[in-house]
Image 1 (cartoon, rainbow, N blue to C red):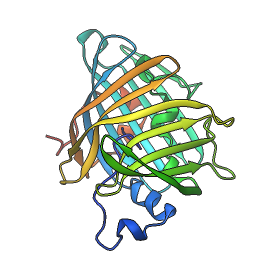
Image 2 (image 1 turned 90 degrees about the vertical axis):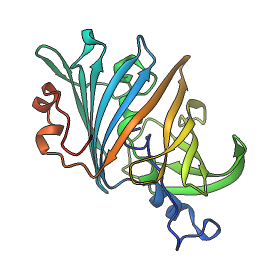
Image 3 (image 1 turned 120 degrees about the vertical axis):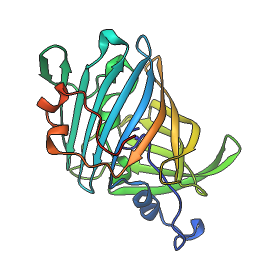
Image 4 (image 1 turned 180 degrees about the vertical axis):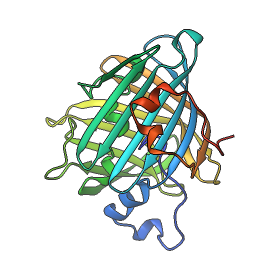
Amino acid sequence: MLAAAVFAGGALAAENAPGSMSASELANRLKRDDTAYVRAKLQGGGAPLQLQIKERHTKSSVDLVYQVLFPKERKGEAVLLRRSGSKTSGSIFTPPDNLRSIDNMKEGLFGSSLTYEDLVDDFFAWSNQAIVGSETVDRVNCQILESKPGKGERSSYGSVKSWIDMKRIVPLRVEKYSSSGALVKRIDTTRVHEDDQGQPIPATLSVRGSGSSTELAGSKIRHDITFTDRDFSPEGLKELTVPKGSD
């Protein structure tokens, strides 16, 4: 979801009226197939961090880079996450020259409640999707979309429920459950904002799980940015560059 599924969602296509949309059509509408550059503040796990985020999404893969811009003493710390099909991998860079692979995708991003798996996973792409009810969230009537991993789709979560604002096609709440049905994590959208293309997206998220909480607030997003493969490589993590066209 921010980055990957976190800042997902958008305007509803005219030919797909909410009343006629199936669960698979709704999930497909929420999937990403683009590039983006994001500035955001991460509050959780210590002092607030100002981040820049680089995203590249296709129908079968996700590439993500998170780099610390501020505070000065942590500037340049970076995380690379990749998913191709059901395979995930990642690297962590700590200046001046410490680069290591991520062994546990359940660890939190910079010590926050958002795990690497949360960021790189795309539950809207899972093969099992169902609309299981409706409920009001912040005075907005939402359809509840339940996503479950199918055969060959690996996840530590047994299911994910998303409360979707059908007028804006924006998830206002996401709950993640274990295979036994226990609630593991809840992500609430506390602010919706229009992006650079005029589409509504979740702009501020509140994440709660395992006795901790995190807020991720986006301040800028630019789509259709041109990235190179080096931007999403372990060596590229060492370069704190801003892509062209992101201003």
